[in-house]
Image 1 (cartoon, rainbow, N blue to C red):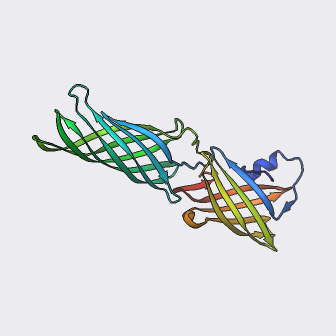
Image 2 (cartoon, one colour; image 1 turned 30 degrees about the vertical axis):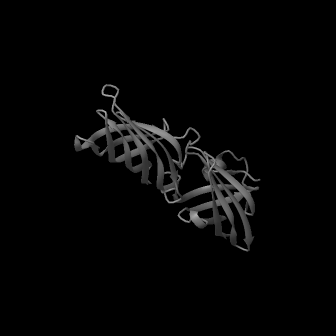
Image 3 (tube, rainbow, N blue to C red; image 1 turned 135 degrees about the horizontal axis):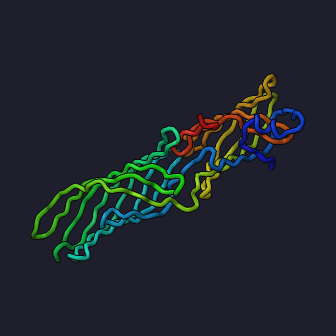
Length: 265
């Protein structure tokens, strides 16, 4: 497989002693994006602590950046012996604003247990507004919500959960890096073929590829779009090919709800 390097065209020219012969792309190429333009997949199993409430859950991120998940919560008070636990569900979105990746999560809890020795039920909602901390590979931000507890013989009490700072780990395999593979066939100056995005955690997304080649500029325009459930993924690239290598000069698009641009403005 030919090697595809995401570098500046001018950088390649500086380290090349003599001019390279441009050509139309054809065949297999791959490019690794490691740090210059990241994609964050929050899928995986993790946990959070919200005061004396522990959340254990699994999340899934789809191609559009929609988050869904489920798990369990556990509330306990060692002093009083009160305990309540039950299932929880997640919904939310991943979006980018410039170079910041923002995550909004809505959590619903529904559990039962004991309070002051009496049977009790709990219903609660929590909203989390988070950002991806790329350096420490975690989600940081704040959570707040509302909880209603009904205790046999004591009635129902509803209260607010005050803002709590959050620092939740991201799957250690998720580094933000990703690989793009492309297989191209040519028909004069037109391209068709397939492509795929491979994330650092092993998830992959198949894409359809098409585009065109301009003889005058020796540049190719490639357009990649997700297949079937991955249709929300789109990428546009401007590339050049020399001596069996493809150089990505520009890239823009949207993957897992995150807007990508290379080089970064």
